[in-house]
Length: 316
Image (cartoon, rainbow, N blue to C red; front, side):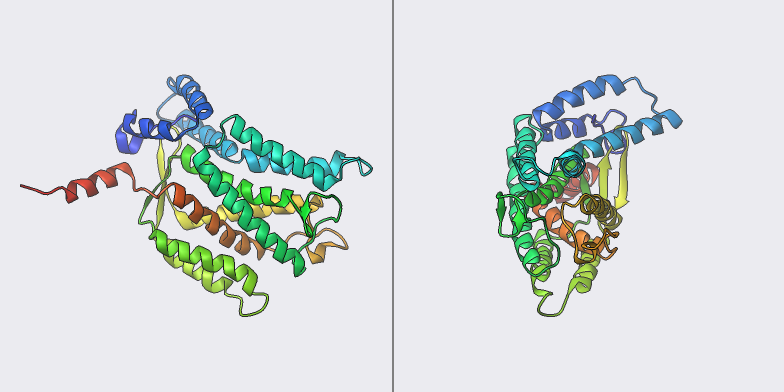
């Protein structure tokens, strides 16, 4: 999880390191220090240097996904090994496990208090949508258990929270910066429109393709700068959105195969979740991205910020 910025601060990147360290939780800072000592003597060029960067990237992604990964483990384990005649219903057991995971994330300082409210807000917005979607028959959960609101078991909200957790954690771990990020007011309006459309498309025109085009127009010029170890890479943001949405869709297939919930076409036998759900997940992810920007305002790369500050300085 170690951080440094080569392209923008030279070989060692002290300014970026100091700023990234302030963003890490205490546990992450401790891991970061150990990683720095371990990686300090590794090659800076050649194939081995590339392998180091790839390894650090994968480890950071795994660390960012820890909430979602643990939730997926709980869902699969409940399907494979939880007894049908247990005293606690399967859905209730998954809810208890989800609460334990969230508490552990806080106790072991894997999430900061500043980030928690975004995760909770995404949890609430997700649960509200679950209540509506199950009522209109978009998907269904097993009817067992008492830890539920209507037809929605409480563990479902933690699945949305795991997406929010990934977003806030990856922002810190990769010290994300952006070039040409759209105005927050504009992205917030789009996020609100996306959320409303998840409800209204059952009764009036489905605007998802218009909203998808709006997302593309807003973010097509945006470039994300993310720190790995020595390297800071740049990539257009829209392909990142699509990649994360596909990853969530894959996780959804695992969850439905495990029976956590089922779509109408899966009640007679499991089928692959429709590829159109990737669009739904991309749009839902935009809501999470916008919520994260309320906590971590998108910042330009350090060199770009320094240039802007210099240009804004009055000259005598």
